[in-house]
Length: 291
Image: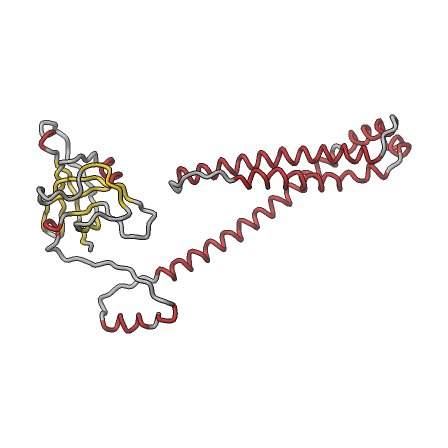
């Protein structure tokens, strides 16, 4: 059950009446409710839930209590329509806003707002094949407002799918750009690599040894790049999970395997293909090219 308050004002409790502090409040409309049952998705962190020996009481959400500097025993005034009601803070709750259950900043005892006009909220599951029954329900009760959560979720999934396609496209562009940069870097160092190849061939190194040396070089570079990428990704996920979504951080061990392995394989293949021409040139031809 919800009703709306146009304004909330905080009054100092009896213990702080001597302090001259201006009244504070939301200054906007709030959805209010009353119940004698403690919400399942809430956590009581201070006070007692609806004590029987207190009349006209209210339970406040923890962040609101912190922002308004509310304490147990403070008295709040609510302007509902043209009437002002007052209630004493008897408990402070922590609310799980990620749940799909109705959540409220303020929950009253039933002797405060039970006589005001109210809107009732409920939820139920309806199979897709029975959706036409909603038309009959609205015809019998035209004042009902029905929200199809399944349709909302489908729309959200559609948006997420489109965003995923866009991210994959950006990732493809980044991979192509990284490939071009790697090829350009290898091409710019071909002269130095030709000199090294001449020295290796002069001292009798076989083509397989030179090929392995080049492959190990690019594998090492790719593994280091993949490790750095995995570290940045893990740190970004930590920030998102901890600070943005308020979730418990979980180590994504697969990143530490996929990053170095994929980086090593990708750089090794691109680097080896870019330098394979060196292994096909004889030492005499390399010397003439460098002369």
